[in-house]
Each structure stands twice: as structure tokens, then as C-alpha cells.
Amino acid sequence: MYKKVLLFFCYLIISTSVSAQIVGAGRAVDPYEYQVLKTQTFERAAVASAHALASEVGTAIMKQGGNAFDAAIATQLALAVVYPIAGNIGGGGFLLGCKADGELIGIDFRETAPAAASRDMYLDKEGKAQTDWSQNGHLAAGVPGTVAGLFATMPYAKLPFKSLIQPAIDLAEKGFLISANEAQSLNWTMGNFNKYSTRPSAFTSRKEWKAGDTLIQIELAQTLKRIRDKGERGFYAGKTAKLLVAEMKRRNGLISRKDLKAYRAKNRKPLEFTYRGHQIIGFPPPSSGGIILAQTLKMLEPYPLGQYGFQSPEAVQLIVEAERRAYADRATHLGDPDFWEVPQEQLLSDAYLKNRMADFEAGKASISKNIQAGEIRESDQTTHLSIVDAEGNMVAVTTTLNGAYGSKTVVGGAGFLLNNEMDDFSIKPGVANMYGAVGGEANAIAPNKRMLSSMCPALVLKEGKPFIVVGTPGGTTIPTSVLQAILNIIDFNMNPADAINSPKFHHQWLPDLVDIEKDFPQETRKKLEAMGYTFRLRDGIGRTEIIMIGADGKRLSAADKRGEDSVAGF
Ligand code: GLY
Image (cartoon, rainbow, N blue to C red; front, side, top):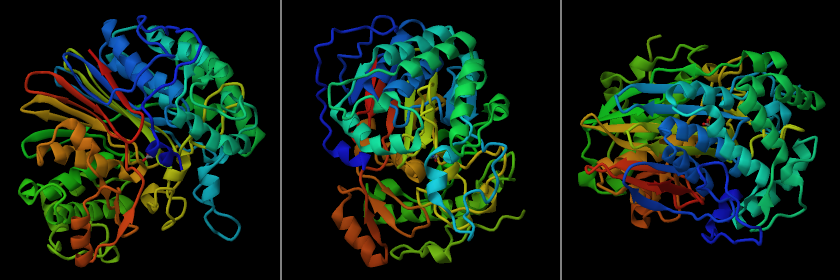
């Protein structure tokens, strides 16, 4: 429903009579006077994120001498305040970085299942999967990873953590002006905030929100101050942990003090491969994003997509068939690599991928029930930020609560929303999660295991030099949106704004449908229907944030047209 609001999105931010206040980010960010900027070329540094204030905070931090990692920390924290639908400290995500000297960094701060979680915890007495339990309220929440992820990023940052978190504290404490869409989204969720939270919160402090209201989040500001003053322990121990566990106990939640104490972000070796002479860097499991991106690009590489033409029937059919095969593999082979042996090398080998496309027939739709995972011997609410700094460091972070406002449970007294990430596990083989994805043993629930993700922060190098930083929210559509952004630039020669704003399409094996946006070309649709494809119209797919570094070194930045996403830079 939230996505419908975006159709009525108005770029005008209405000012209130409150006098302008400056948040602690180099006197550069005014929470009462800000504008959405969709695309701009910057000389030195840029941020693209889901909210203008967050992009401005990241930029201000770089102006103060911070690098892209500093900006990523500050932007994420700002999003946790100004973009509560997906920005978070109660969720998790993945950071992918490429330092100017070429060093690659992968930080996995995905949530984990609590120690008391069990394989069949979402099955009722009859063995029926109860998706309401995995999607809403206390039982849906995994152990949050975001705060550990921020601190795992600190070794690459230059400024003290205190200066990186202060803008978020100020935004929470002094408030910021909300747009018509944000007001409507909060109003639509009001019933669920009341149903799934046990205490009043900032979101329920008004009966009805309207454009121009100021959202003040005092309890969240206090939590952020504890993190500022005590570091990671300000979240995973002490008062915040006590409040979170008390919240769990008031209903049927499982997260314990021990779970919080035990949580660790992990460094993962980024996945590297080439596509038409470019070096592509993706995130490995427990996200499926990097493997799906690599498999689809490598399956497509032998074909002259550029000659076929953008969204021509030939090009779309090929892309759909590559996606079908990659998602079939996802359902069987991918899960948390600490619990499940992911056959990564085989899944990405040239021979395997060539064989995967061997039964592709131009002009004829494959059928998903005939396509199984390859034989191996042995409310879509997430958010993404892309950053490039003046030194040429690139950072892509995708982070999530899972559904819109996660579990809709606000931790009483601590002011932050908890994720509903447990639904990303396969709660029963063959039962679709909220994104229609099915899975099996590889992604079954187990204590302390990370649930499989689709998040796909991605970096591209051209001739060894930084070229593209890209990523998006969108549940299972994430890897295919990133795929299209990359293809649109490399194969179809688009500029970054066109690459992300052009109509998107998506196929994920099951259901056996091609999802399309309403501006998808009708001629192509008709021709593919004649080949046997079935289409489904969807509201906007993904909200992609991209920065491309031109041959002249300029940062061409674009924020997706589908939301209030915004770029900033200098
Ligand atoms: N919660 C969406 C994802 O991780 O794929």
C-alpha cells in the first residue's frame, strides 16, 4: 500500500512556522528546509540514499574530512531516524566497500535467529505455516545486526564515532519535517503499530500525521546517545538490551540478553567476477544477491544484448530465462554459509552456467516446473545507500527491517523498530515468504543462523578504476534491479538516471510470472505473451541508488524516481 503513496509523491516539502534548526553535521543540514534532488553531477563526492536529509548528512560528514566509510555510518544512522520504514538500528544488512587502493571490504551484519528459535517455530499444531507469526510482532524479529555493522565499519573511517552519530541524535531529538507520503505511510501503519507494540511510541504520538508535521523521537535519541557514549555495548548490553528483552517478554518474543551479547558482525570475502571486461564486486552468502547477479550476468554474457536492443523481446526473454535459472538455484543451494555448504564455486563456474542455459529456446518460454536447481555434486522494505568520496573510495550499503516498518514492534522506552527478518528463512519447504520466494533445507531455521537475503550492494570497476556504486531495496527483486541497472549502462549505454528509472521487470522462478512496471513496453509484452510468458503488473519495483564515475572523474549521481530518494554531494 505504501508504494501507492509514491504515485502521488510531490517533491514540494512544506515549511512550517518552526524556525530552522541546524543538526550537528557541520552546520549544513536543516531538518525544516530540505529538498529532494533526483540527479546531479558532483565534482568530488556524492551520496545517494532514500532520504534527502540522510544524503545531506553523509555529504556534510565528507565535507568535514570524513571518507566514504564515515559517510556510510552517518548516513545509515540518519536513515534510522528520518526513514523509519526501512532505515534502522533494529535490523541488519551488508556493506560492500572498495578502497581507493583497491582493497575490498565486505561486512555482514545480517540478523540471526535467536538461540531459542527452532525449525518449525512458525508451524501451528496442524503443521500449517503461519506467516503472520513470521511477519508481524515480537516473534518475527531476528537479533539485530546494524549497530555491530556500524562499529565493524569504524576501522575504515577517519572521524570519531561521536561525530558520525551526532546528526542522527539531533534529528531524533529536535525532529524533522515529514512529507505527505511519510505522513500517509505512518497513518496507514498506525493500527499495526498499536497492535504489535506494547507501549506508545513517537509514531503513535499523534492520531493522524500530515505533511509538514515534525516527527520527534526522544526515546530513539536516548538510545542513540547510549550508543554514542558506550559504543556497541550501548545497544547490545546495558539499558537498551534490558528494554529490548523486556519488550520481548511482554509478548512472545525470543531475543534474550545472551543473544544480544553474542551477536557479531562478520567480515566476508566479496565475490569478484568479470562482465564484458568490467570487474564486478558483489556480496556473497548469506545474501543471495551477489551470486544471482554473477550467475545472471555470466549467463547473459555470450549474447549480444546491445544489438538486440533495450527491452526488445529478444533481450527481455533472455534476461528472464537467466533469472529463472538463478532463482531456482537460490531456492535449493543458498543459505547461511556458516550452517550450510554453499556450492559457490560450482554455481559460478563457466561450465555450469553454460550448461544452465543449454535448454534455452529463443522465442519459447521455459516452464518453471521443468526447471529445477542445477545438479551440484555435493512489503519489500529495505533501503540502500551509495557513496563515493573525493579519494575514490566506494561504499554500497543495503540495510533492512524486511517489511515496511519491520515487525511493527517498537521497543518500549527505546524508540526503535524491530525487524521481521525471520520471514526470510524458509519457514516450511515450499511455503512462500512475503516476497513469494520458496526455499528448503539450505535456508531452514536454526538457532543463531543468518536468514538468506536477496540484498545486493554492488560495485563495478572499469579498467581497474572505480566506475559504479549501485544497490536497491525490493526483496527478491533486488538482484534483478541491480542486474538491469548494470546492463542498462554497460550494454545499452544509458546514463545513470535512465539506467535506474527505466521500466523494470523481474522473474524469480516461482511464481512463474514476469513482473513488470506499468511503463514496460507493450509491444515487447505482447510478443513475449505469444511465446508463452505470463505477465503481472506491479507497483514500482525497487528504489535504486546509483553513482557512476565518469571518465573525467565526475560523480554522476541519481536517486530513483520511484520514491523521495535524493542525492547530495560537492
Ligand atoms: N529482507 C529482504 C532481504 O534481505 O532480502
